Length: 246
Image (tube, rainbow, N blue to C red; front, side, top):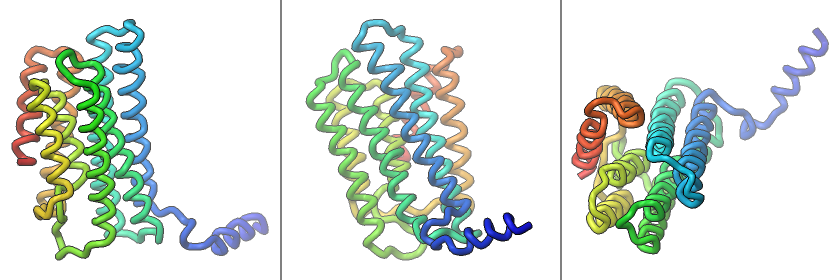
């Protein structure tokens, strides 16, 4: 009993700024998924390409895994906001959310674009690197503006970074010619820093978004395991994501 009392006292003495809430734990899951997406993009696509030891099936599985992890990060990002509104959130929740979003929806998709430029047959590596930098900086500016600008309730200014990240990887997976792919990626980066207003995913829209994410995971799994019609289903899903962004 004395030990339990000491532990409880130590927790009470801990500054509020250092206590993690349930929403913060979900936010950290977001960051973890983003990091693992970079890991699978490196180990399953880039390194086998550089060493000449990879197989197309392995690269496909790794690409699908990386994108599924970005989708899972979007799920964590969706739920941490809901949980934070329903329960308490820690004082550092907003900062954790921005930092995690930068990893999962800034670094991970930008790195995916960079690797695409290195492995695609018709890609120009330097131009792909430039597009990747544009995506990363757009997310940095988008998140910084979100922290500084007050919008009317229920609206975002500029395309939300999770939606932008998923649109960028959809453009890459659609396997269009290089120039249209490059222009479309830069277009998405512009939408993220634009003044176009987007509704926040709440209520019915949150359910629709979650359903779309789960469906996209299924399409990626079908494509990864070379299911009949998997390639066509993935292309249809990517085209729909781009159309929704537009």
